[in-house]
Length: 420
Image (cartoon, rainbow, N blue to C red):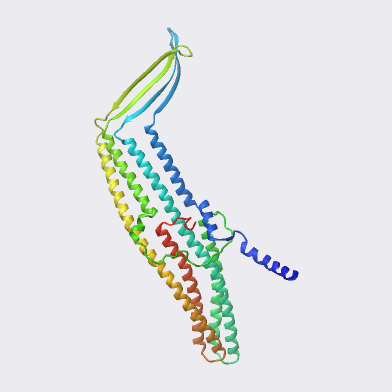
């Protein structure tokens, strides 16, 4: 028993470093959490939200009292007179009473812009999820392809040995031998190619994870889709729930409030103001002073800039409405397209699996037949080539299923934390 345990530990010690070397073994859930923390595109989108929140706070400050204080000391004189001194300090306040609802419109516009930036973050999260899922599926495929190409190379090597034996026995011609040698060279090239593409797939996933340095990583998972939806949903209603369309709607609302703000420039601005303080020729000053009043300002002529501002704002509103209509049409089309591609990908996996099963059975029979001289080299090698192609096609169909599923989820507006 102890010997068996020792053998198992030796085996694991030789296997685990290859799996966990560098970046380690990552599951999809681990990739999601890491990308949520480190992906730079998400960071940019989040800072847009923060900036919109501060813009809203800045805009809201215009309706609050504006309070300031001042302190001054002055000394003056001339050649024929004594120096004079003056000191003063005080506090003043100014409160907006009416501006044609310009400030309230600006605040609503800032709130709509904040909502738009929040939906924009959801759109960025959805895009990152699609990119991350595609990279995850790509690395899964690359890992599997390395194993498949090595298996194919081993099979081609066995085939060459069989052809060589028949050639040396005078039962096969030189063309068949050269073809088998070329097939083996091609298989070995594809092994090297798959290993290079594995590194490329690792770099792609590391980029989406937000890592700045390359470390060899592997991913753990399968090619099973998580979406179980079989009945086609109502795409028109589904489109209304997508973050992209909600972002466009919020930006349109911000522009609509901008039109109201521009029109408010035709109304007077009324402020309540007041001040109090002390001033004297000595410090500290003891003479009190105060003032209070109401001011009204109304521009009489500004060269037509107010009219132009309103026209420009109305034009922007029409532009935003058109952008929203176009965005809705685009979202519905994208939903239709990705739903179709996803359903096609599901069916294609089943078909390719049947083809692979048939190719494996034919290859097994043909290999025995060729060994016994019952079929020609040309017939046998066609069956062998078909098996190789079916193995790759089945792998591609499974990887494409994950990507098609990710595209459908992205079209629905699924964010990075979709499965959580």
